[in-house]
Length: 371
Ligand SMILES: Cc1cc2nc3c(=O)[nH]c(=O)nc-3n(C[C@H](O)[C@H](O)[C@H](O)COP(=O)(O)OP(=O)(O)OC[C@H]3O[C@@H](n4cnc5c(N)ncnc54)[C@H](O)[C@@H]3O)c2cc1C
Image (cartoon, rainbow, N blue to C red; front, top):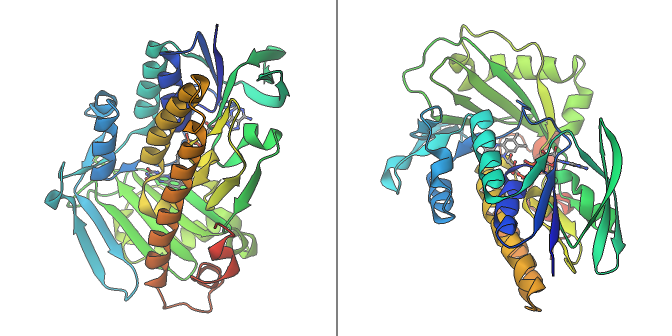
């Protein structure tokens, strides 16, 4: 019997799922609303454990490119205001990696295509309904709108969870975090490139990644309400807080302010739904992590692959495969939230600031209704 799969979203979760599905399905179509050469995908740091996880998935070749830059560790100013360096050399493989996202994304897309998946960019899922034992998807691109009947659907559409929500799933949002991201080009050389910098401030926290070409990616993670309250909007808030930051201001010295910053959703969330038959959410669509722990890309790749395995096993009659995968997703998410709580609890300098008040462990939003 022929097996047709649709993967919604060509991020790391969707492409990892598509690559795995393509070895067993007759057709795997991946759709992504964004154009293929989109340059603004968020997230670039892989810690050493992420590199080990990629190697275990057989994806080490995807990051074997000199344009990705090794990272020696993380410098943080968090909690008591002191500066601490975490060195990666003490654990295997001894370094992390700062990805050139466009290079990594292109390699991942080629890998999925090489496995047999068809990738359709600038193509949006704009309808999904159950039809017999499968689903009927409605897709839209500049060429028009058409319907695609499929047996399996993987929702890898990120925090939008665009496919599963069309079949009744609900997003459970745990906070209102957004990230204001700017790329500062032409910064004066710093002694050591590649070290991730993290700094807590009254409005939230910063992270920055300096590349060897003088570019620094600097993101302020804050509450959506802080952005709305700031008179000059996101760019003015980003500029003012960057200039006042202790670790980042020296990093971006001599650099050129970006013409536009990007504001992206960075809220913690989980998806309230029952997987199957034939539908599974993976990556951020299933559970979106706090960017503080730099685990979203690794989690997306591992979860996309494992989710595809579970769908295929379910198809072969394993009654427990989807439930077990969902259980593992939620267990991992609970463990992540507990690590996150410990980090946020270590910062107590601004108890009255809205960001820290709403992220204080024990507040209803921080608990989030996840059992
Ligand atoms: C500020 C910030 C910094 C981060 N930094 C890091 C980091 O350094 N390291 C790390 O590991 N992780 C980081 N992350 C997390 C990481 O970016 C995500 O966890 C990861 O990208 C999730 O991958 P995904 O494939 O699940 O979803 P995404 O990468 O979000 O991909 C989802 C795709 O679905 C598409 N889509 C959505 N709706 C539709 C639709 N209706 N039809 C068609 N396509 C659709 C979107 O266009 C998108 O391409 C960061 C996150 C944020 C917010």
